[in-house]
Structures are given as structure tokens and as C-alpha cells.
Image (cartoon, rainbow, N blue to C red; front, side, top):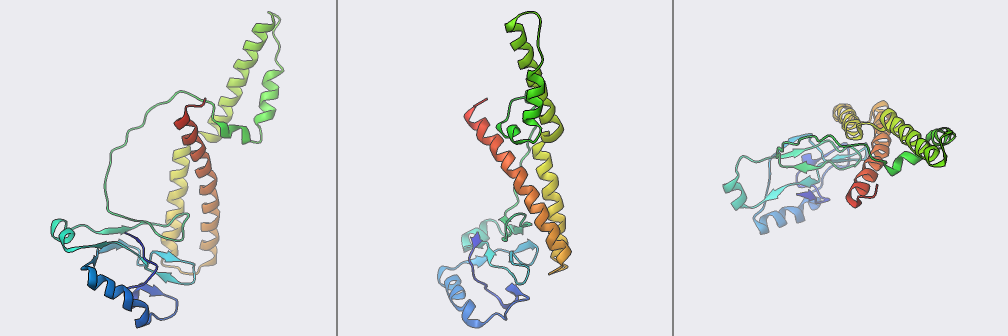
Length: 214
């Protein structure tokens, strides 16, 4: 399964130059020589686009043994999200449970516009019960300030990403029937930027967790 960067049938390209026989010749010979067959697919009719041309160049190929063993399996063409290619998959379901985790300081919080301001406010508090008590109070106030930023602006990062992906998928589904629609193309660009932003935050979280650097 993957990007073969070539069409196999005339109907594999829409809104572009007409598919010529010379374009499919090598691919068809390869399929014949190796005894491979293309898996049936469900979903959108194309897997790559630049919003001018729509092509199905990503495919899942199997041999005779596969077709005998798993005759009912199909390839699902997913929405592309941030890529210009649509991912392909064989549907596999997995139950995933959620675990409650204690608050930790994530490095990306320092990039928030209010971070330094909130830390300065927290650190200005003073105690009359001695230097160590003052330091303890300041650290406690700093922790609470960081927790507020985290809860107000970064809580449920995975849910935010899922929601953005859902919106992006709906837009891209609509784009598949309203090709070259400028308004939808702009919405797609904006959602891709938003998804990239939160994706980087998610990546930072996983990197930090994997190294246990709190």
C-alpha cells in the first residue's frame, strides 16, 4: 500500500490531462508480471490533489494468496488532513482507555504570551515569616499560575486536535463534491495551520513524556 505515483486506469484522473495509454503501460505490465491485483476501495475516488487535478495514485496491491485468505478485505481511503495525499488503511478497531494523569509542567507553556507576566506576578508575593517561607509561597503561587494557563489554554490537547481534524475532514468531504471552491480551499488552509500548531504542541508533550523530563 502506498503512493505509486502512476495511474492504472483512465478513470484514475479527474480534471487534468486525459490519461494516455503510455502512462499506464508499465504499471499494467508490472501487475501482470508479478500477479498482483488492486484491492477494492471505499471512500473518495481520488487519493491526491493540488485542487486542479484529482488523481488516484495511492493503491493497495495484493497477490492471489491474499485474495484467497482474506477475500472480503478492502482499502479505505481516508481524508488527507494536512497532506495532499489521502492515507489508505485496512480497518482495525482497538479499544483505548483514558487515564487520569497528575499535572506536570510542559515546556510549551513558556511560549504562551501570558507566561512571563503571570510568573512575575506570582513571584512578587512576599512572606513575613522568613526567607524560606517566602520562597515556598512564591513557588506555590508560580505553580498555580502555570496550572491556570494550562487549564485555560491547553487542556485536552488531544480532544482539540480531534475536533480540528473532524472539522477539516468535513471540509475536505465537501471539497470532494465541490471541486476548486475557493471558500472551501481557504477554510482547509486555515484548519491545516491550526492543526499544525496543535500538532507541534502534542509532539512537544510526547517528547517530554518519553524522556521523563519534568
